[in-house]
Image 1 (cartoon, rainbow, N blue to C red):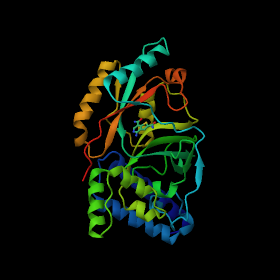
Image 2: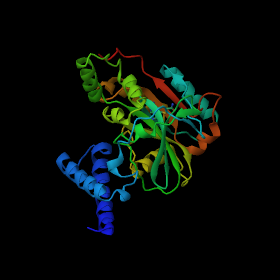
Image 3: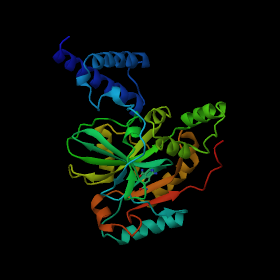
Image 4: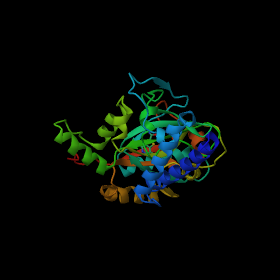
Length: 318
Ligand SMILES: NC(=O)c1cc2c(N)ncc(C(N)=O)c2s1
């Protein structure tokens, strides 16, 4: 096989593996058995080994990077990653809506989303390639954890978007992975993690990407930071577009035209959350229209166009 044939085969194998990976890790509906995925990965590794000059960072064979880091570099968030104000009961939720409605003379629709109990991260893509991932940090300065985030299989290494975009989401550890990890830790005599959030945070803080890769982390994307593409009108349209780009969006989001619908959604998930298979600690309610979000703006600490309704703390997972 000459170099040109090798490049052709590598391109075909990468596209196939990216599709299989998307079906399995993002859509949770694989079209081929794991053995077929492994067979194609072995083929890719063989061709890349024979033609190392053709290996690129965005290859599915390159998710688990090289040597452990000595330390994480600092990263500035050009668009601050703000924290949300909290509401602890229905009255405070309705107060939020009243304040939002007072800030604009148009009718307001909301989007409700599950508040994932994990670690907020920012992902930057340039020319369709994942180039940097960072923790929220203090909202303006985070840590570069790109090598660890590359190991999260539901994070695409390439997306069909040429413009630079920065997307935000929550990395979390599913219950199944958490229970298996704590089993392993107990067998080795290590201290088990108190909850999935601490386990996810501890995994992303590993300097060796091989350890992060072994922790079966997952992610849901829910927002954007720097965004140089297209003019979308609403948050719900943005969620649909992120899904189209290949990102993992939590499927339980709902657009609500009245606060009664918001309250129904909150009550439903307060009862149903044990069935999810991952931890949530509340519901995020956002004004859907982006112009209204801009009109409402921010206080010193929080957006005026979003609120986090917090569930009462649950008994600790054992
Ligand atoms: N601090 C924040 O802005 C957010 C934090 C979270 C979170 N932990 N889970 C889900 C969402 C969401 N769907 O918007 C947000 S937004």
